[in-house]
Length: 276
Ligand SMILES: NC(=O)C1=CN([C@@H]2O[C@H](COP(=O)(O)OP(=O)(O)OC[C@H]3O[C@@H](n4cnc5c(N)ncnc54)[C@H](O)[C@@H]3O)[C@@H](O)[C@H]2O)C=CC1
Ligand SMILES: [Mg+2]
Ligand SMILES: [Zn+2]
Image (cartoon, rainbow, N blue to C red; front, side, top):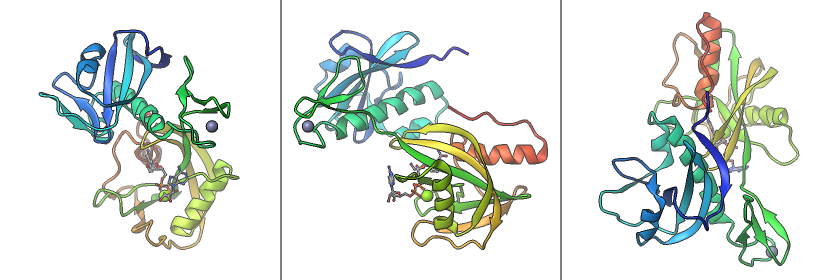
């Protein structure tokens, strides 16, 4: 299938195209969605922090207007990226997920982390540049491990206090300097539930733009120990039988994919597809 959306670095000096506007309250939208004619949007009284050309949707250029603050525009409203993720328009979610990551980076990289001077965009490269230090700052991506641990017909699922009430998910955590993906996985599992795992298998990856994780998904088998939930981080962790699962994460998440895939294989059902 040809993808309707491709990322690209576009020249902001060119006129025309579509634009999305992002403020600390989320993306601007109206009855037609979250893409607006760019020239119309720029005629509104927006406080623009940065503008980036981010790609092509159905061949048309798309730009991001990252704003200092939101503005009331009649007929329009603001909505967070998570709300767009839960809707049916997967392509729009991909556009906005990418825009959110570029917007976060643009917002947090206006000044050089080395000398503190204002940086500028490099034409046709997704990088901010400090003239004084000759340093380039690229968008930040944070590798994170996510793992489904199983023991026959049972899967280990846990709750963070940040989750929606009742929902249980797979274990996850950010990689630290000096670690391989497998080192990180073993450390996170020990920290969060105090058990040991074996037969670690890579299952697939997913961009998770909240705010800039790259999820590396694994399956692992239980090897030993009793569950001891990590204080403050893990509210509860349990072995659940695949025939009696609790409420699970959103279907677009790799967490849900890892669970659904294991259950499908165990029961001989058709396998799910990992959402991009
Ligand atoms: N797509 C999916 O299915 C899922 C995605 N996730 C994502 O995975 C990521 C990691 O999961 P958590 O359990 O929250 O991580 P975690 O177990 O490492 O704990 C979070 C803590 O890590 C530290 N931290 C925050 N940002 C960091 C960074 N960039 N690098 C290193 N440490 C950092 C902070 O102290 C934070 O409180 C999060 O972005 C989360 O949203 C988590 C579960 C499911
Ligand atoms: Mg975690
Ligand atoms: Zn500098």
